Amino acid sequence: MSPRGATVEFREVSKRYGLARTTAGAAAPAGGRATPDERSDDARAAIVPGAVNDLSFTVGAGEICVLVGPSGCGKTTSLKMTNRLIEPTSGEILIDGRDVLREDPVTLRRGIGYVIQQVGLFPHQTIAENIATVPKLLGWQAARIRERVGELIDLVGLDYAYAARYPAQLSGGERQRVGVARALAVEPPLMLMDEPFGAVDPIVRERLQDEFLRLHRRLGMTVIFVTHDIDEAIKMGDRVAVMRAGTLVQYAQPAQLLTEPADEFVARFVGADRGLKRLSLISVGELPLHDAAVTPDPSLPVISVEARVRDALSAMLASGVAMAVVVDADGRSLGTIGLDDITGLLAAQA
Image (cartoon, rainbow, N blue to C red):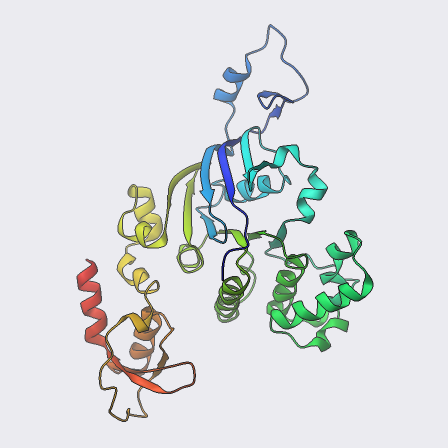
């Protein structure tokens, strides 16, 4: 589908604690204008440590941009400056060409989806009431709200019976689905996601990642997504921004990040197994298939044609075999792939 998301642009955005933003947009000492005896704004900005320093990048409409880096690198601060939960010290953040600093903060936030790691559902409200939070604030009619709540519960893969339950009655993965549904309530063109799947176990996390990617393909909103996990960044992102000490080190598509790391820090952060990580970017359907006319051995692992090559490799290794059967969405056999196909792919990429 054509993207319905917003374009987001960071222009030399900085956040330095201890400095406040003046009405003209320049950094000034917190508490007011500097006296002649005080350091100039530029001098103070030069010596005050920056949580984020001169951050510039653009997220295209409908893209998922992942901010990744070690703890304290400024990724969450950058995310929160987008909806002004944190005010930038300098620079501009534009959403579809509009400067967020010229928007009313409350109105701005109501038009941006926001999902956090601990979900943040209101414990005294039902699931339906939680999802309806922003539509109610915007004055939607009750019938329209009920219809939208039903649509969203179905969209995130839950039964409508969940509407009357409370957050404490749901599992961690179910609560996370509700958090996504609430963020989508008014069809925002932009979603901010701060380590949204970090509080669930690895199996649930992978399932939530896959479900969200399917949801994104269907809805086409723009997403800025924060994680500390490079594997998650590579899987989820159309583009990945690697940050270090408040600075953008590299901004690239996942494949380029893996094949052309900008420096030694990025190479170390991405990891020595970059070749294996590249397998997660390639679908099984991109490999040549063999033995399409032969009845497959039922003892071989079965892999979807849409699965990643890395998943196929894992299935073969777990089964102790050198071949897997590839099937379509209806379970029909399309042929097989072998371990030799994957090792040949790795050799070609080396």
